[in-house]
Image (cartoon, rainbow, N blue to C red; front, side, top):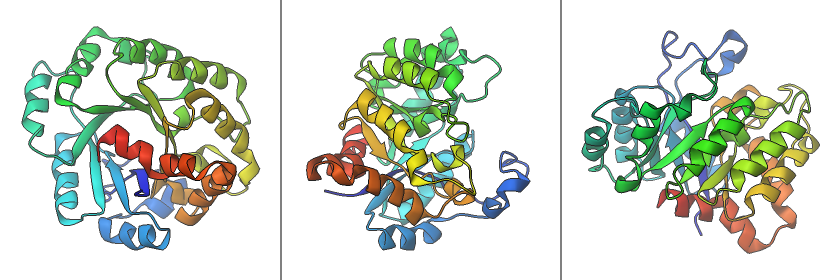
Length: 276
């Protein structure tokens, strides 16, 4: 079975567009291209990846599709579309010609209204995904898990995946409220979770593997072994850890699981979810 990194990014750094990359993240204030990732994947025995949008524009789809056209190891793309647009259905239909475009993400984290995803216009946009077989990546903070439970329940036939465990406060060790909300979201069988982005929510300089175990325990309890997937969040992870270190955290944690469960986590579930 293929080993898949279900979550990483490519960009040509633009300080204005990419203003979310602050000075304390200076290590990633540069271009990150397929040529940079390919040897890293090979070194870590990863067969392919899913690239996720990092810019909220349709130009992002064009850029990532061009990358995927040149590199076979890019197995799928999570692009961007304006879900608020009146003609969202036409836009989705036009993009269906690109087989590597598997789904979409719209940045919901940090929105002024934490329940922005429940707005009728946004919900209308999301309702158009299913007919085209597209997935949706849910990028949120923990305070948005309650409305997200309602959001994913409204579309029982739509495949959703929560990115980065919904970014719990690992540095502060906060877990109880997040755990309760995550269990509620996971009760929806159409919803998966990416075990990704953990190191950036921990103490960047002083994290230890043990810091992540309680959060991993919750995710496995909530989603089981058939609705979780590995994601590196490269190159964002580099502010706190190397690719090998990120992979090491989960390889260590899942070492006691069965060979089949590990195959599902390290590629099988991503392949099923994104139809790679």
